Structure formats: structure tokens, C-alpha cells
Length: 120
Image 1 (spheres, rainbow, N blue to C red):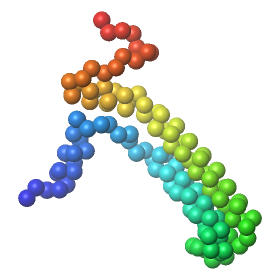
Image 2 (image 1 turned 30 degrees about the vertical axis):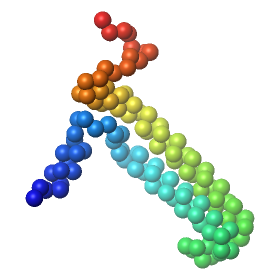
Image 3 (image 1 turned 45 degrees about the vertical axis):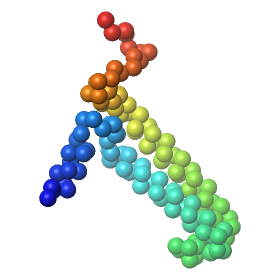
Image 4 (image 1 turned 45 degrees about the horizontal axis):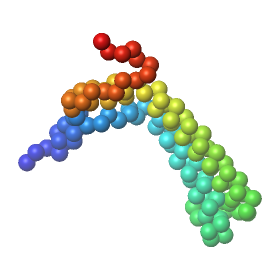
């Protein structure tokens, strides 16, 4: 029987699979902040659904607290997603190089980008 750990490692290091961005500490941190925002939205929405907090019984205690919780959660989520996208954009040159290598390995020619001089 084959070792599943070896199979999983081989699948992740396969040069013929599409490249994926690296999970950096910043992306992970902003992901956790995004989850916090989602939790705030869920807490606020629970007041509208059942009239009291679902996770924390005393919060939100009024419609005003529920609206503020939802609005704050949405704002935090938008901010965190923007930061995640910014961190992913920093990896764009590395990802493009990996994707070009993937296309060459598959026998395809990478598309000529506008910012590159034509190949001779």
C-alpha cells in the first residue's frame, strides 16, 4: 500500500498543476481578521432573526447594536479582503513565472505580454 503522505506531497509538487499563491503570515492574519468581521455580521444578524444574540445572549441587545455590529463587520471584512488581495498582488510576478513554466512544460507557448519586448 502506498503512503498517503508521499502521494499528497507528490501532488503538491507536481510541475504540471496550476500554480497557487503562497500562504504568508500577512495573508493568514488578514484571513483571521476577515473571520472576525464575519462573526460580527453573524452576531448582528442573529438579533434580527431571533430577537436576541445567538452566540452571546446579551449582545446585541437592541436594534441599534445589531445594525452597528453588522455595519462594522462588513467594514472589517471589506478592509481585510482588500489587504489579502494586495498581498496576493505582490506575488503576481512569481505566479506569472510559474504559470509560464507550466505552459512550457505542457508544450504550449506563453502569451506575449504588452510590457515585454517581442521575442527574437
